[in-house]
Length: 479
Image 1 (cartoon, rainbow, N blue to C red):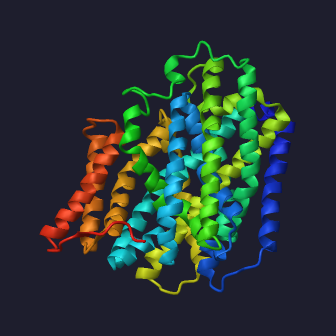
Image 2: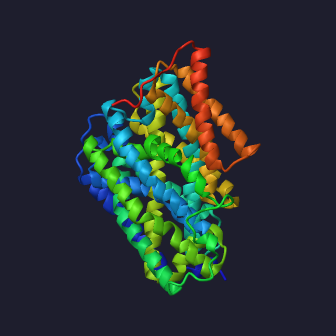
Image 3: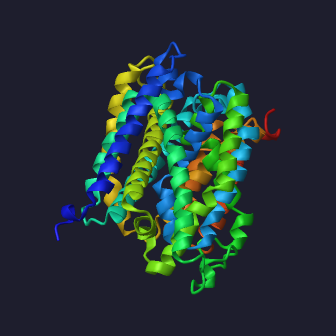
């Protein structure tokens, strides 16, 4: 049968109508908001520092909650993956009460700007920005396009090439970042968030109803929250590297913190972050694991296709079309959130520092965004052979996350450490973790992340003392 003829016209029509409606509503709401910044940089990259706590909470939630979570975590088809979301609550609390006061006190526009101030060096700021950009372009952007495309392909039941979905998603998503900046991204996040969370909870309920709330027959290892050493998250990793992964992602990652930096005030930012933590605690764990577990009972071990299949099975065509529109919106907002933060890092931390201190921000935003989009599209096929997309993402980002976090820890809790020492620790940590990943893996990768972090910090302090001749002084976190 021709796959195009297999599409349900009602499902596709509702999908298209709601997708257009979200875009139109976003445009209308952004047009009604007054610009609060006199410079293009603040307007494009920080929404004029005008976001209220509701927009902060919605943008943080939807920036993170996209198909890489819904598809990737449900693709493991086991309850254990909920630990990523439960541990994230701790990361958000640390962002609210430890890092945000520091960012606001130092009037930071990027997390890397804080490093430049602490080390009094522009090169470490640019180096860390470049590493963030590498992670965004090589890992997050193509993974978002791949998982979003896989979901739509599975739910609509067509056998089209993955790029047939990825390219339109990338082009539409980039339009938000190019024409509306962070303000449009935050508004579309909040609008989409209500629909995504609402229908995702409905999927959980309908999925359980489809099996009469009977989980019998599902292997115990797929239902337990205590993972053994061969599981994706062994219980003992919760005591080592897990918390530092969360600190890195929620407190130093520009894509997340930029939403909080764009708030009207520190208090408003903290309220938004805590609201996002509440959503993650109460709602997100269930929606990222239960549908996948039910899919195991209904369809067997289908991997990353589980979420699309269960949605297609339990939702009527009109509602699955609506949910597809919401998921597409979540992909678009997550994708353009990363695009916007990537452009922010490049323009503020690299281009203005080394090439042109007063660039045309609008033109730069357009050019850099299109370059990043093109690279992400080219990398989408690379992820099609991944056994578990969410575990692969965590492993790959370990190449950057713990080394980068070491620079923040050293810069914040020690005084009299040279930037060269911190950069040496970062680069050494990347090499160490690459060795663990590709050459010798003696422990679970979450344990190895903690080892990498400790090694990076130690190398920084040794280099600072022996090569630079500085004696580091422990001062604790700045108040």
